[in-house]
Image (cartoon, rainbow, N blue to C red; front, side, top):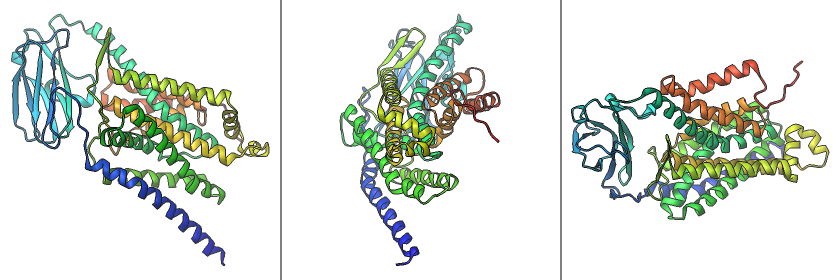
Length: 449
């Protein structure tokens, strides 16, 4: 038998294996596309019939009565409600699309004006709140606040800084779950995996399918996400990356393969699940106030889970035998293999753990931001690479530190620059730091030449 025919049979075998995995995942994706989750809310929207946009004018502690709240629909028509003593309003809508929630300024208390949302992507004209991608069967919250006549801008800026810092830490922890795995893959294989962010999307999609579609308990659904995403990492290395490494394929060619895999996963999500936002909803989120900080119980739980998991990963890397083997392979693969370490098993374990962490990041991200879309991974890909590069390529602890820095920069930068430039600000910080410290925050300087 010729060498060419053997190679062709090997390629055909791996293609068949990948097709088999796709056939296993496709039914789940089809199931996701066929059903939508019913949020447990007071407004009780009807599946495929209506959605609810509800909220409070003012705050829970100081609701504002007698304000005309105006809902602008996708076709340009409007609907108006006047708030009662509790300041609440509720609109039932019967068509999906983008909506705008504003007020009639003449009905606001004397000396007051509508305060625009802090997040730039939510700001509409005249301080109104944008509610985009409304889907039938879902509930959407809208809180409108005002600036009083005695509004203290300096105090407000301090409160905004504290709130944004907390949001930055939250974003940094979620990024760290994914970037630690990305850094470990780079450290053990030298591969920059551009499809890593799609594993974050996969985690959110699988979480939506298990919790909302299949009706599984959220905690069991989270464990299911870890298992399924971890298996996808094991499978990828077994049928794709290990054979490519053994054939001596260069890192540049393998990096191009990851780009192709990323595009394939994006279009698979869009084709099977759809382009709309999928929300992992189990109940209405409880909002808690800690001084100037407003945060939901979901965000608190996500931050706590992220901290615990990252601590466990750090302990495993520093104190366990497999962790020391992983660091040895990352430092010098050839020497580690000569010392008796099975580098293939270590690398496969790294792929498995990295994909599981990315999946966990995805379901937590979906809970925190109230949804995940087919292109969510694409939106955070540069942030992940910025975090890994900022912390030091191939260092897990550097990825953690870099993620926290990037998260803080992204959330704090809108305080001084337009919010649309917040991602650019994060990349600018990365460039400036690399000019001073090319190896990153925790990376080791290497001699070149």
